[in-house]
Structure formats: structure tokens, C-alpha cells
Length: 394
Ligand code: NAD
Ligand code: MG
Image 1 (cartoon, helix red, strand yellow):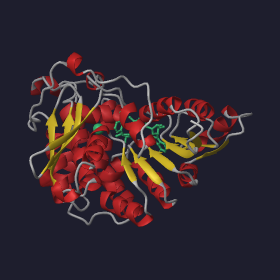
Image 2 (tube, rainbow, N blue to C red):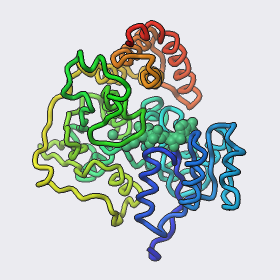
Image 3 (cartoon, rainbow, N blue to C red):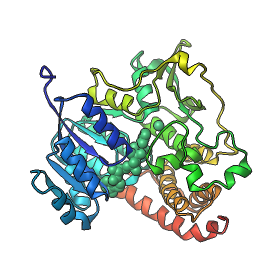
Image 4 (cartoon, helix red, strand yellow):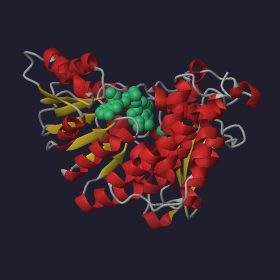
């Protein structure tokens, strides 16, 4: 490892599912990284433990009341700490070589933009910031000269496949979806799904929000919008296909009929390692793909009748302007309400649809403040509509 200069890395969302996987990959690359800062939402004990384990210089917790507890938990470690949203922004803006953006939800937008401001490379797991403010975010990254590395598995596979030819030779980009836990269930069964049912993802172990998004297939909708911005491709050249084995993650079809696909076992450590080592590679302990053991790879068309979230996301992408920002906001409200037992499974997507239907068109956000104002407006409306849809939950 000594022949590689140490890179300074900041990890936003350090205590989450992605954050823990990043820590695992870092353990495969001893001596390569100095962890500059870590940030998390509320879990002080986990954040302090991560900060110590990674040897971070600074730890930030978003909960403003958690400052004394975090300082306590870090006593004697020499790790500086801060609390509240401003501390998270401070962590994001510290000079480093690579920021991993892995906060969940639109809460990751302001910290991710703050990290772009320092002009560095960013590995982006937080798809919601591209859904909520994609055009602004991509322009800001370009303006700052920041190279974005997609960490989401599908987009990471596509990013790698795209290097096979110039952008003008790309005909179509396809992301795959596992289909989630309800792929084979009838509509009536899905309608009765509880949070516990929806949290049982067949292939991936992830945070609660993205796991529910996978069950509704809103995740695939958000990912189409994510791909639209990351790869500057119009909706007509983006496709999603259900692939229950989650071995093929993304495919790029070129104008000559050639298709280059990215394959790996369903383990986020694979795309994470790619982002951390890019443009080089390093050896990791991730499980290797065994095609014979996998045996069969199958593909099917997504069913928008049973999974209306996909239709809603495509419609928001086609409408553009503020629609994707609002889609994301309403979905965050709906997912939280579903997890709390305040909405039925289809109540979740009905709430998103109704929220979007009640708002007049508006321009796409041109700043973080714009995006957060549109987000807040849609959240208020969704919260107000909750009682109407809650009646359907039982
Ligand atoms: P998670 O819920 O497991 O973790 C979220 C992290 O964000 C935690 O560290 C939490 O403390 C932190 N956080 C929440 N609110 C915060 C705030 N206001 N300020 C600072 N930190 C805050 O979520 P996850 O599954 O790790 O997903 C993180 C992001 O990565 C999401 O956008 C998700 O869509 C994306 N992603 C996740 C996976 C996966 O396998 N988990 C795969 C692809 C993309
Ligand atoms: Mg994904």
C-alpha cells in the first residue's frame, strides 16, 4: 500500500447501510485512505464507533441536541465533533480527495452540494439529490469541475460500460430491477402488505427507505431519473427491466447492436470498491460471481399495473420542472407514513399521485433553496392529504 499516496476521504451517511459497506471496503484497502470526516443523522453511539474505527478527524451528527453525547462518546479519541445541520455541512466542506455521499433522502442535498463546493471527486449513492435537483446538481458539479462517480449499483455498472465507446454511439441504457418482494404476488395480496412484508428484500440488505422504494418499485423510477441526469440521456433512451437474480446490473446498447453489461454479485461493496479505487482497481474480499452456480439469468417486463410508482416516476420525468422534486418529497412522506402504519401499500403511491395532481407546474429548482422550498411545499400538501388515504389502511 505504501506505493499509493494516501487519499483523504469524507463519508456522509457513515452509520447507514452504504456507510457500513464503505467501512468494509476501506478495511480491504489498509493505508490507502485517511478518513477526514464522517457524518450521520441521529445514532451517536454508532457514529462515534465508526469515527474511532476509521480514525476520522471530525465527526458531525445532524441532530442538534446530540452534540454533548457525541463529544462524550469521542472523549480521549482526539476526534473533533459538531452537531446540527451546520456541522454536517462543515464535515462535507472539509478539504479532501473523495466524498462519499450516502445520506438518505433529500436531507443529503445540501451536504452534497456543500461537498461539491470544495471541488473534489464525489461518489454518489444518494439518488434523491439527483431526483430533487438533478439539473442544478449536475451543472454545479460541472461548474466546480467535480467528477461524479455513480455508486448506485445499476449506474455504476452503466458508468463502467459507457467507457466502451464515445457517448454519441450510445443508443439506449437499461437498468435492471430485482422486482422486490412482491414480484410474484397478485395485486390483492400486495394491497395487504405490511411494513414487515415490504422490508423483506429478496437480494439486497439496505436501509429502510430504499427497501420500501424497492417494494413499490419507486426505487427504479427514481433510478431512471438519476440515470437521466448522470448520463444526460432523454427518457426515451432509458429503460428498466426486471431481473430477479440481480446479477446483471446495467446495460449499454450501442448503435451497432453491441451491448455491454455490468455484472457482479448483488453486494454494494463491488460498486463501492470501484468508486474508491477509480480509475485504478484494488483487490477486495467481495464474493466473486459464479455464473454456473447462478445457473439461469431471467428477465421480464415491469408491471406498472401492480407497481404504479414506476408510471408516476416516468410521468414526473417526462413533465420535468418541479415534478421530480415533488415526487421525491411526497414519496419520502408516504414511505415514512407506510412504515408507521399510517398508510396501506397502495395508499403510499396514491398519496404521491394525488400530491402531484394537486400542484400546478413550476420550474425546475435552480438552487438548493429552490429545491428545498418545492420539497417543503409538497411535503405539507402530502401530510395534509394523509388522513384521506389513511382511511384505506387497515
Ligand atoms: P440508511 O438509512 O441505512 O442510512 C442513511 C444514513 O444517512 C445514516 O448514516 C443516517 O444517520 C444518515 N442521515 C439521515 N439523515 C441525515 C441528516 N439529516 N444528516 C446527516 N446524515 C443523515 O440508508 P442507505 O440504505 O445507506 O442509503 C443511503 C443512500 O444511498 C440513499 O439515498 C439510497 O437510495 C442510496 N443507495 C443505497 C443502497 C443500499 O444498498 N443501501 C444502494 C444504492 C443506493
Ligand atoms: Mg440501485
